[in-house]
Image (cartoon, rainbow, N blue to C red):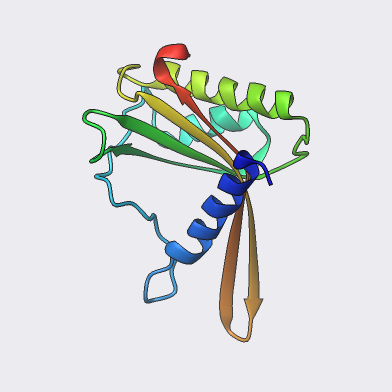
Length: 149
């Protein structure tokens, strides 16, 4: 198994196992301080603009300020349940790069984030015996350096 596939499977497992609190509700898993992205327009409009680039059911994003690396800021973006997801790696990469570039342009300060993590996620939610079970698997993930966008 190559390194990228292993990382995708591992990150999907972490999302599934690590994001559920004791009430059974999924929430963001982060040990880094959350850093709210500051866009030129409201977040709903930003998400709609991203959906014009990639046809997806939902867009989730959150910024982080790393404890480990001084002044490393990253914007993590999940493109949830993409419609007509391409298996072509070049096409996936090009779409992820377009999303990262668009997000950087929409920020009040384009230097707010040093990295953009763009992840395609497949999410399934099933209702069984009065319980809702949600699973997530990362289909493709790539981190872009802000300076390269």
